[in-house]
Image (cartoon, rainbow, N blue to C red; front, side, top):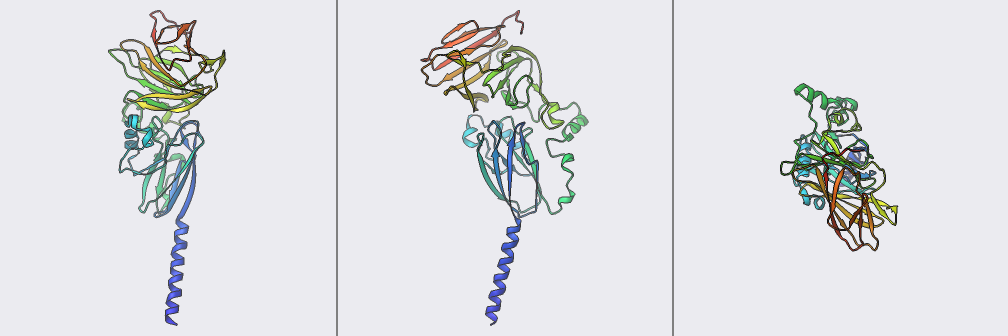
Length: 367
């Protein structure tokens, strides 16, 4: 009888432990959204909660989600930026002990799941480490037994949508225009003037004594919208608000394509384009997209010693000639293949690679 009683007591104890663990298990859905944001800005858990995160990419560009140790988000982001050509194969997740868990790199419409248990209290971060995203695309994971002690979410200094970053910057002197030391080439996903929300800002180094140059590439229409010389971007106002203010350009425009259609034409009509992401080659982004099903890779570098760009297009197999709009006529263009006619580059179907060089004319006036 006594053994039976002990057996029943053991079963009840195991049941209570299982129920307690079940109460500590939680599953949360986080979506990536336009404007470099996660749908959930802050998560609050008790210690030893087994967390399952389902991450869905509802944006038009690739993202991941990386959970980091306390006070290590900026370091993880910086190491991710330095991964270069190895980044895509490693999901842009650096091999650091600061990384606690991560999803794979998610294409638009894709999803992934991660699970982890944090036994101790602490202020953990989750961040997208895709190049150019981690400066404003992050949230906080608080593990605490006293959740009521946390500040209101709108006044949480650890979240990107608060004004705390700007206030601290002014207290220490002029506000920083970048969240970490700028290293060129650099890629920022941010809201750019005269471009769609899918615009990407790229800062280029000055070569052979030439000026620092930058350009805005629009992933919606797969086109270089404009380029400027003299600096990169000023993101000061991005840290004040929700990251949706237009980024300021530093320098003067020397190239513009003011149209809102793709520069690629087939049979006299704008091609149907679809953006496929980019990879980093020596930190320079090479954009991949399709135009009427033809795969195109586009890599842009600065001219050495002067204002202008060198753009290399690698083109997949096609049976049709492609027409590429060069943009404004304030620049002098040369092409390594095909022929230039009245502001258009005509590319025969046999051409698999073409380099277009542009130099700003001394008396150039942008329209």
